[in-house]
Amino acid sequence: MTYSVNYDFVTPIAKDSDMNRYIDRSRKESGCSRESEIIGVCGDFGYLPKQQVHDDIKAGSWIYFSRAPGVPDARVHARGEGPNRFIQTEADGKAANNLVNLPDC
Image (cartoon, rainbow, N blue to C red; front, top):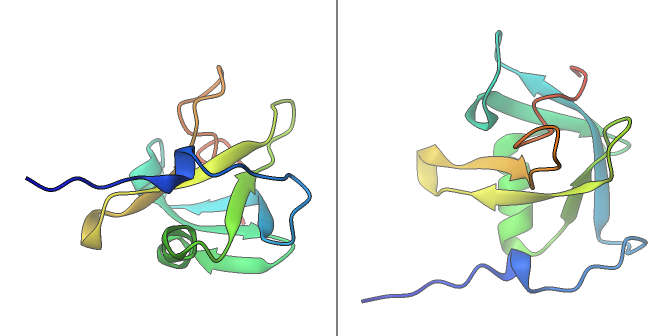
């Protein structure tokens, strides 16, 4: 039996860290209503496909937060592996994944 540890939940985060990137828009497949249909994100860094964001989070290169109007910043987590990988935020009381609710890039 093997175990994996998800360090996303145990690493302390400084909101003003140089490793942080803030997402304020997302690119979705038409009619998107689920996190698996997010295909990329945008912020001050430009556009990144979800695979790059997923890989950045898993490698510990960057920490991503979503910035949605009217809700607190939410940390973005990498989920799944291989072709089934996706990104999502913690539930914030308004949505299970507020990346879905961000304006389109």
